[in-house]
Length: 143
Image 1 (cartoon, rainbow, N blue to C red):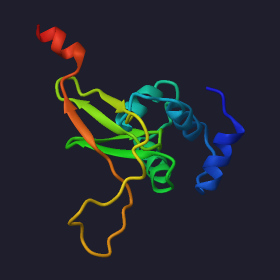
Image 2: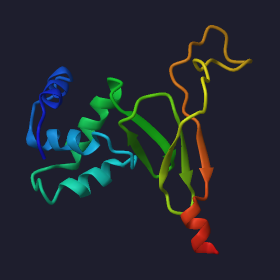
Image 3: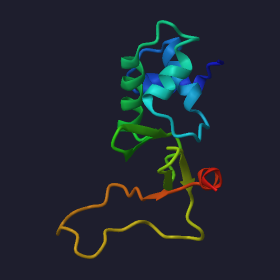
C-alpha cells in the first residue's frame, strides 16, 4: 500500500504517530464505499501487518471521526460502521445481509434543519437518516 503525503499530513494533524499500520488504515478507507466496521478493517489488514492491533484501528478511527474526517454510523446495535464520505447523504441498511448502501438525495435538499418541536435553543450538529431495507440480492435469493 503506497503512502501519500496527504495521509502523512492527516496523521500528523491528528497528533498521531505516522506508522505503516495507520497509513494502511487510511489507504483502506480512501474511496471505500463498503462502510466497514473496525473489525472489518482489522481483518483485512492484519494478514499484511501482523503487528496491527485492534486498539490501533479503534484509536485511529476515533481520531478521524472526532475531527470530522470520517462518519460513524451507529446503524446496527452490534457495531459501529464507518464512512469516509463525509458529504451529506443518507444510508440504507439491508436487514438480511447487513450491507450498507449510500443514498444520495435527488436535487437540492437545502441545508438540514431542526424539525418543529425541537428543544428551544438547540443547534443542529448532524443528521443521519437510515432506511432499513431488504436489498435486491436478498429479495432475489428469497425468490
